[in-house]
Length: 280
Length: 268
Image (cartoon, rainbow over all chains, first blue to last red; front, side, top):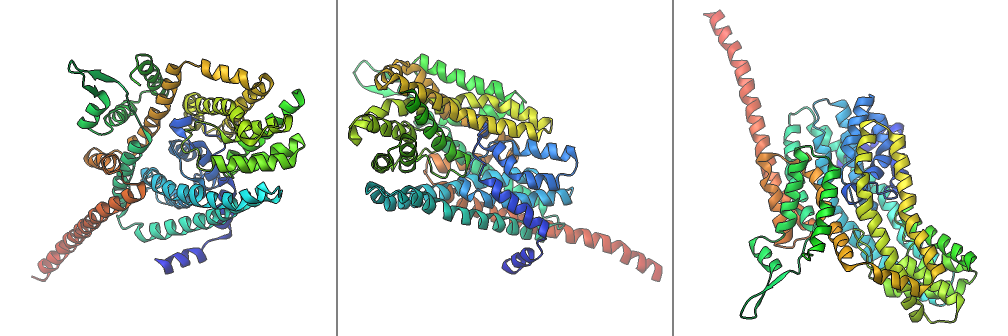
């Protein structure tokens, strides 16, 4: 794999490099807009970042439109490490443009399964370790009134991220290309798609469990004075029952092609109603 | 008063919106915001020292997933403003800054987790029309407004003073606050369900519940869940690969055998 990787790296054309450089510089802006709030997170930012690849690989307007729709779904990943995923996605987009039998749902599955674990690593590494390190070095300097302290804080936090971001983009792209080359045309693509689907489903399950939360303080008092909280009953039946049912309900609605906006509005109104009757 | 309020609002916008504009570069942290506010208000030393003190206080608070209770950047700019106006110490300035930073956090949550959700159909429509330029306009417009609204309220808050803000924050009914925070916790289900739809296959649906249970019951971090997923996944893929090879070999044999038969026929 490593030798194949360096072969891919050596075979990279000037055009490939230029495209990746453009994606690299665009990736810094990926979280500016957050269009679509909790429902889409940084999807449009990702479309903005991947634009050089989409322009290059989606030659017909129809293909480009499909790609936009494909990337307009929920996406949220610690941006410093996001480029690894984006590198992989770029390689997959290229494969999709060259091989008509390529199943594009694998692209979404890869994005879905990478965002949780990569964010977990990225968040703790950058927000936990590096930011605390930068702050602990710079706070004493700032307390002594040194104007360099805030600038040093920004430098310590941002420079490693900039280097890592670039490295991960190129690594993701070469690894993706190598891997896809090896399996192209062997009929193994179907297996890859199934594998990506399984991984995607497991990670989407974990993502629902970690991102969707519900608790109720509602309680009943029995005649003998003992108190039973509804939450403890719910937890006994199944931990996270409400988030699970809600997400399955949303899935059902999505498959029935119910407008996402109604769904959003429904959940919002439901939350306010639950608050009004004192359930939350 | 008005000039100072405008300068504070500018400092707040530079730091608050600048952070997400480019790489979440942490320029909204108190240590940086203190300097920016200090420069604009003409008292760099106070800005630096106030920023350092507040950085130490807010060190643990990082807004993960947009759920924040008090907003460090607003608190810092306000505290620096208070400190330049009268000789208050850091603790008092911070206490005075708490209401406005809570109000700002509330507005930011309202904008991001509730109002922005209703943009989703716009995104779909623009993608449907293949309108990249329109998407970018929406993107940068959203960037501006989601920070400009809290900044505007911050500006009004500085003009109105700390007491007025506190009265306003206390005036928001608890029920509405609860409802909005519940909506913020439940709404990710809508977005993630779109991903579920894309990777959902009826015969593989069990794996969804596996991931859910691994997180909820075992409390495993995502990294560990990926490892388990790979352990489950690799043997399945390898077996499928064997099946595929077997299928190919059988097909090859089937393709080869008729020709040998023909040869035999011809020879006999």
